[in-house]
Length: 518
Ligand code: BG6
Image (cartoon, rainbow, N blue to C red):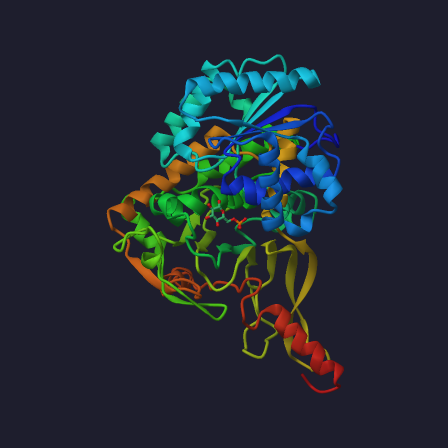
C-alpha cells in the first residue's frame, strides 16, 4: 500500500513509445500533474524514446502541443510547464536495431552522470508485439544493469490469450524479477476503484451484509459512447472481451468480492484478489452461450449525431465478427458468494459513458409497505467510478406529506469528475515509489486469461450469436434477457435518462416545495 512518502526517489523514467497516443493523451498530463504537485524529485528526468529523429527541443515543443490539445486546462502557467519540460529528453531508437540501444545507453548514462543516480524506470507504451523484444534488448544492451533499482511498467494488453501471455511473461522474467514488473490496468488507478477497499474494510456496517445472505446481485457496467476510433488494427483482434473484460471488469469483480486482507500490504491484498479468480466459475465452451452475450454496434444516433456501424468503421472488415459489447453472468463459487450473480456489461457506442458498480440487496422477507407501483424497491449501494466519482445508498422512506407511500431516497456522496490522466498519475507515483499494490501480478493475469479463453473460443466457434445493437442504445435485448432470467434488471447508471433515484427525489422535493401533493 502507498506509504507516506510525498516525493519519489530521484530516477530516470525511460519512456518507450513517447510519441504515441497514450503518451500524448494520458502520460504527459499525468507526469506534469506529479510535477505540479511537487511529487517528482527535482533530479528526476524523463528520457523519451521513439523512432523519429528529434532533438530535445523539438520533442519538448511536441509535448507542449500535445498538452495544449489534450489537457489544456492542466497547464497552470507556462513558466511552470517550461520548468517541467526541462525534465524531458529524447533519444531516437528503432526498437529492432541493437545499435540504437547502445546510443540509448550512452544518452542515459550521461544524464545519470549529471544527476549522480542510477534508478531506472522503464515504461513500454508501445504496440504489444514489441514488449518481449524490447525487454530482451534492454537486457542485451546492458540497460538493465544498474547500480540503483530498476523497474518495468508494461501497458496492456498482456498477451492475447493464456498461452501468449505466458510466453510474454517468460520473456520478461528473463530480464526483470516479478516484483520489478508493474503491469498496468489503469482502472486500478481510478479513485473509486481504489476506494472500494476502503468503503468495504473501513466501515463496519458493510461487512455483516457483504455476502449471499444479504446481496441479491452485483452489477458492473462500463459503457462508452466512443466507437472503435482509430484503433481497428488492435481492436479487430481484441474485441470487448479482451479489451475490457479480461482486465478492467475482472479487476472490479475482484475488488468487490475479495476477503479482507490480513494486513494492508501489497502481497496480502493481491493474494486475496487472486483467490476470487480461483473461485470464479470457469465456463466450459458449451456453457458460454447461457452466461455470456456478445454484440456489435450497428449504425445509430449518439447525442443527436448519426454514427456508422462497426463494420463501416475505417479498417474494419465488412464481415467482422468482432464483439464491441459483452454482457455476462458470473459466479464466484465460495462460501461468501455462492449463488449471487455478478453481472458485467461493457460496450462501445452505448447511450452514455459511465462506469458504475451496483450492489443490490435482497428484498425484505415480507413487504409491509408499498410504493406507487405496489412494489418496494430494493436497497442499493452504488459506487460511481466515471464520469463522476462518488457513491450512494438507496433506501426506502416515507414520501413527505403523503400517508402510506414509500419512495426511494438516496444518501449520496459525490466527489469530483473522474479522468483517466489522474489514474495514470496515481499509478506512476506508486511505481516510482515501488508500490505495486494496484498493478496486476502474474497469477492474476494468468487466471484472468484462463477464465476468458473458453469464452473467446466460444465466440470464435460461433457458439454464441453475435447480436447487433443500434449505436446509442444499451446493447442487445439479449443482455436484458440475461438478467431477467434471474428475475433481475439492470439498474440505470449515471446519465441514463430514466426515473432514477435522483429524478424521483427531484420530483418529490419540487412538488413538496410548491406545497402540493407530489
Ligand atoms: C482501455 C481500452 O483499456 O480502456 C479502451 O483499451 C477503452 O478501449 C478504455 O476505451 C476505457 O477507459 P476509461 O478510463 O475511459 O473508462
